[in-house]
Amino acid sequence: MASIFNALHIGYSGLKTSQIAIDTTGHNIANAQNPDYTRQRTVIAPNTPLHTTPGDIGLGAKISEIVRIHDEFVYKRLKNASTDNEYQQFRKETMDEISSYFPEIDKNGIYNGMQEYFKAWNDLAKNSDDSALKINLAQQTRTFAATIRDTTAQIASVQDSLDEQLKTAVDEINRLGKQIADLNVRINTDEVGGDHANDLRDQRDKLELALSKLVDIAVSKGDMQPQTDVDSHLIESGDAYHLSIGGSSFVDGPTFHPLVLDKKEGSRFHDVYYRRQDYVKFDITQYLHGGKVGAILSLRDGDIQSTVDDLDSFASSMAIYTNNLYASHATTRMTSDLTIDGTKTPENSELPIKKGSFLLKVYDIDGNVVAQRSIEIDPAADKFNDIVDKINDNTIDDNGDGVGGNDVDDFVEAAINSDGKFDISGKKTDEGYTFAIEEADGENPTLFAGVLGLERFFDGRDASRIGLNGALDENPTKIGGNMAPIAGDNSLANAMVELQYQKVDFFQPANSDKYHSSDTLSGFFRMSTTKVANTTAAVHSAAETSDALLNAVVDEFDSISKVDIDEELTNLMKYQTGYSASAKVITTIDQMIQTLLGIKQ
Image (cartoon, rainbow, N blue to C red; front, side, top):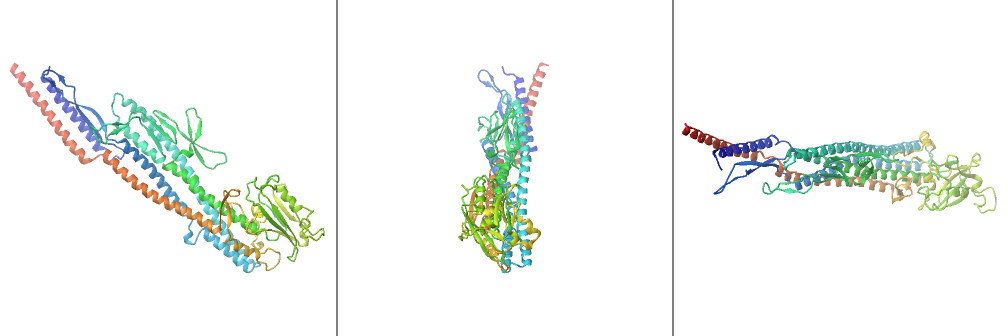
């Protein structure tokens, strides 16, 4: 049965409801500047009425729930946009740095060094005996090679820095994952009975957003729970929680599985591994995309490594083809700088020696060719020991005169020495005899001498080690511009000048028989720098696009979930009025009670 005290309780419920609504509004206003806060709203519902005749008698109001105005689908788009934006921005910043190491437009850098290098050869061709010109060539070669090495070292340092940043990022990912797992425990505890742990969910969303900027994540939070009767944008997640990275479970409710870093044997970079609870780990590096980590891996193992590989290919082909020509300079001994196995073929040794033949020429002291032998090479069939035997074969009459003692094997001897180096030495050097190696077909060279480094102008086979031959660096006057050992011969210097206009083969990685492409030296280098420029331009465009997309999603998300001060002040006045009205109800009931007490007296 209804009583005057029911009316007093109704007034009290109005006070309590308005007080909670004011508290919630004040909480919104206090956090208006918090970028990770989601605005909250009280849902006011009537208390269960007293059922009587002639009808139900209301018993006031209550706060049925306090919800946050959150659209999980918009929030998911925000995470995806943040992942892509962080990925593109990091790539843009890094590629800007990489492109700065190729300042070709300022008449500086590798391309300019190569032009000066070939110009020095051209000067030497005018007078191949001029020591001053040889010294100039040595200096230009040093500068050219140093620029290649320095550029490669700078790019390699960026790779090393990225690897260090990967370690930092993985540590941060693990820290965030552990915090999310801990929050899940608290959320599950606080939401027993249908309550909403709004602020804890905000904290978890903040961690998710931070995690999404580091790497692409997939989050499942159970069934979505829309409440369109409260707000058309309110679509909250359920109480289940599962977060995966690279297809592997990272956070499963209160359980956390950390990522670990390790290096494969022979690698200088770290890979990312997923570790299960039984401590078994497996590599997930190739499955990590997006965010800072995805950008690091795409740059370190992709774009930047491709640039390093191109520089290695350029330096390798420059050294191989130059040394192959330089072997035509008459000398008394040639020893390779590579260690080889005489029982293997060039193909099995993964050396880019090609099928064909080269000429082994013997000169007398006056520069006349006294013997010449064509050495056929099949890289797939001929072992290095077989090539040694072909050079030393004493059954061949090279001059076709039926006279012994004047054939190639009488002047030179080949061997694979105890150090595993291919060695050709003159037998009659004290009589002034010298020898040289020339390609039988200049357009289709075997590259035998150049690959093995039998007579070297360049030392080193990759961009980090290329440099002028040590002996020539110590005494540049030993540089030869001649093929035959006679004064005034400039045929070698001319051939070196022509090398810049010829198409050569590039192999990747260096010292491998894996074919890369065919181009001129300058053409290949321009192609490599164009790739860097195009990649840089592409990431700038992608970064601008991702910025625009992120800004659009942020605006949409803010319009739904962020605090609107004007709206909150309006609500504050509304709830204040309600509080005052409820207080008036209680005052009225108090007067009624006083009236009743007065009648009794």
